[in-house]
Length: 301
Image (tube, rainbow, N blue to C red; front, top):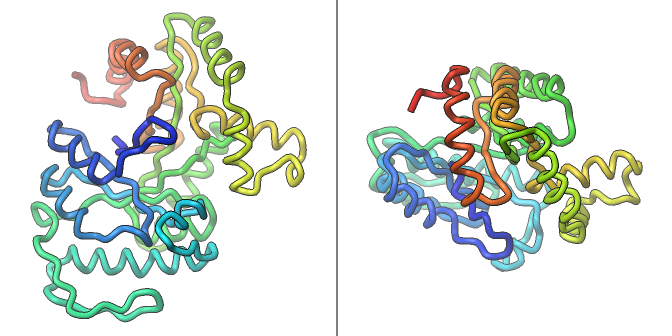
């Protein structure tokens, strides 16, 4: 479960929010998403102890310049962001290790007499995830992380998704490592396929906030001026679906089979979201989760 608030524009700080979720649950692993250059590491161990080794760190390198300006920080160029994050993560992993006081001298960090106690809970360390999409980002993830969170569904087919997952896993194996791959999906599930399609068209097509969609795409330099019309519209439609999530639309049987296809493509897991959690999550739990258990994708309740 990702510790990311669902209200656009009003968000809790993710690591503190993860502490609350971990204190109220017993089985969930909760990830806190942090901008690597902006966040100190001490709080991660505190969170990990609260959850007794159920905290995961989703370390991102940033792309939104406005987020950095709020902290008086400068967003480095793309390649330098990952060099900076590499030093940051090397320091954190050293702090999590059995090593006692240590120093670090690098291009971006110069630390002396670093003392980090306690260590993570139970002698392990938190899972580390990264969402790099560029070749540099994916190389960073396969070199350092346990999982790559990838929006591999950006308008591509299931076959292309499977090819992408194989490529990522192959890149990790070249470095002598294994890596899991996760993606994100937006579920629209109703008793019948026609009901699900109608609700999807109502929310995602008929009532999308196209101004917001175009704004966030422009921040990524994705505009009608630098993309062919068909390609731009495909990306635009995809972005409207939960900020770029894979649309999983249909009756419970169809949705469950879509999850099975994603698993067959090599994905380890999927971050699931809905248009309205309070109304839609209970139905999903009652109808889709038992089907996933029968397909062997979940332990029976």
